[in-house]
Length: 538
Image 1 (tube, rainbow, N blue to C red):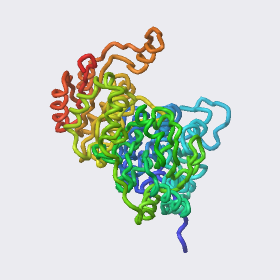
Image 2 (cartoon, rainbow, N blue to C red; image 1 turned 180 degrees about the vertical axis):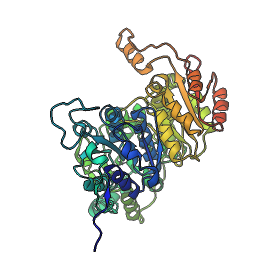
Image 3 (spheres, helix red, strand yellow; image 1 turned 135 degrees about the vertical axis):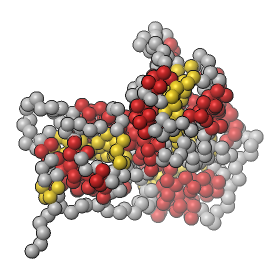
Image 4 (spheres, rainbow, N blue to C red; image 1 turned 90 degrees about the vertical axis):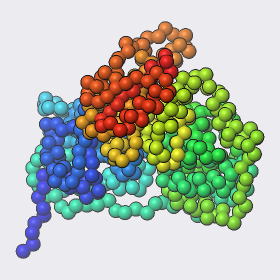
């Protein structure tokens, strides 16, 4: 007599499916409706981190995914909790991060009219569908495994984007036939068309003025990016998400420079531009792409990128590692190009100097402090960043990092409050590495409650905050328009004292030397150390 199908509650079916896909950590907040999920986490070997707000859970899971290269998982309850995490889902969508959000939903037979059930809303799936790659409401316990496998298949086979799975309340706690555990099938990285590879290699071999532009989609092919740049003698510029894919101290590196008028002019004059893993969008470059005089070759796993605002002259649709490996093989017999001479205006050193000269007065505020941070960072340090002037004007172009380091920045969607919870997610993933959060006072206060989460973790976590008592970017924009400043000047908060109140440590740095000393100490003490840099002294 054969045994019948295994009966599981919907909550256990969710956790079993996550564990089967290798999930070892989840971020979230338990609530009345999701307790059946929480009940099974420990038994299935999934550790849990509890941020103080669902948006923080989403940012932490996002950073966990970026650092590990595996999907981040967040668990919410119904209604407001799911809407709280929606901003983080939108950020993950913008930055191509594999984030899975699991939530309960209204019961299967819940009437379409409102009944006043706790956390009731018209449609959770419609709400999340607007910011995620998909939102899947299951209709049976047996379907849960397939829904999770679907999410992991999407993460593995195309451009990674966030997904949401909703399990109706009446399925979570009632045992039902669950069926076998389903796994997302292994997927080979997609390869570009052979004729397109040959055409691209031919253009690169004959190029006199080649350039590489690297986005976040090139990160898995970092060694190949450098090998190709050196073979072509081609300077390399990156987007924010591509920061440090090629060592920013390498002679060919322009770093994050595509916003610079000097670099824009240089890029426009190239006879071949190879763009890898980037949308070439305004949010990638901080400006519009200049009209290119030469051929545009694009490598991207997303075919839609080839025919948008910047159509590729040669589209290489496929995985960056496969594509660049193919290009290097095809270039094997061609002559190596020598980089332009250092005294040339087109030399990377000259272009970096021109970039810095354009904003020297503005950036002088942050650069000495960023240099001090750089002296303390280990080669494999992780820096998390916020939508703050000290980050996008300061650290992105000026904090020079090597390829073993990571810089996590919320591009595109441009959310505030990312840096602190993202640092918690990164430190959870890689506790042995230095992790530093970099923020402004305005952005920090979107998620400042996560200092409590950091304190509870007991892991060393410096948080450096440049404090200009308000929203400095919007204040500057108002001033530039000739408008009176409105709602941008805030009473200064004693942020170090707040960190101490949450169970961490706090200090103020009034010089770069003091910041370096405080930061070095913060790497050795448990919990968060919040170090403010008042911008009037910077």
